[in-house]
Image (cartoon, rainbow, N blue to C red; front, side):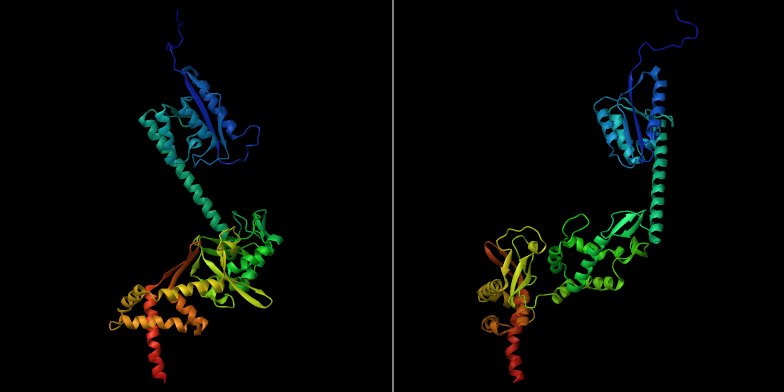
Length: 445
């Protein structure tokens, strides 16, 4: 017989397996015996216990993310929770506040899709609503909008603080440049690293070419902050880092820094002036003492340029074209990784001179020259190109180099030999030039 004050209870109650999810953005305080995650869990456990008459049961697994931002879904405990939802082990998610689960409206929409697909409900114990009703979903979207707004405002505050700190010359974190160390959030010079930085600047100011200075620096054993042998990428980063002249920067603006400079201003200005020069001009100022007919035109089978180099032995200069892989200290087992300059130049010019005698080249050159010289005949072009062969060896090196650059677009050396690509417009220009020389000679006489 039922007693007077006994509540009516349903004959059967559906069991709801409840998982508690907790999160804290920073690791501060997590080492305490009872921390923020514990407080969130205790409150959620009490709420689940109060709903025991509705069939709510706490699952034994803990889903705690400590020191993880709510701006991403890539969280270990959250991913484990989603896996258990998809496996059918959870019926309800219980959190202390909505933003513990996510601070992003877009991310939360993705989570709700997963919850709906597996008939899982969501409960915030301090913001009472149910996701099974339209009003609950509206409330949820409003709360998440405010959570995202708060997150964006906090981000703006952090960015403004960083900008203000940089303007005052303060170190605000990030990768510590080689040559410095950080103490109490300030940069101090590290003598060993500073010596590397100074050496890089001094050698570049002297040589003016990263390609030519790299073997020198590697022979001296210079290494990056990570302990690797220095490479061209590291050199360029060093030469562009204004931290070394005692400056900080923020979004393209530079400010005097609190830290001490490693590089004096005059050396910095000299180096930057050379870096900003046209690479071709800088190369011409640092080239080997002998001419290099195929400079910038010769490439290996791997598609990388072969640069002119030289060595001295007993006062004699030996010229070569060397693969960029070797110059940058990379492994290279290609057969033609270093070529004697004189031999490859002779081979290329021999092929060029032979090509100039081919009828189809003569016809192509003539047609290309007709645009500027409509009265030009094919015979005149053939005679002009034929005139180059006997006079080649009497030309000055500078003139030979000019003609090669006028004629040749690219030379690729491989196991099959040297493949030469000619410039047809260059041939036409050369033909006009050669035809003008006899007339000039007669006028001079």
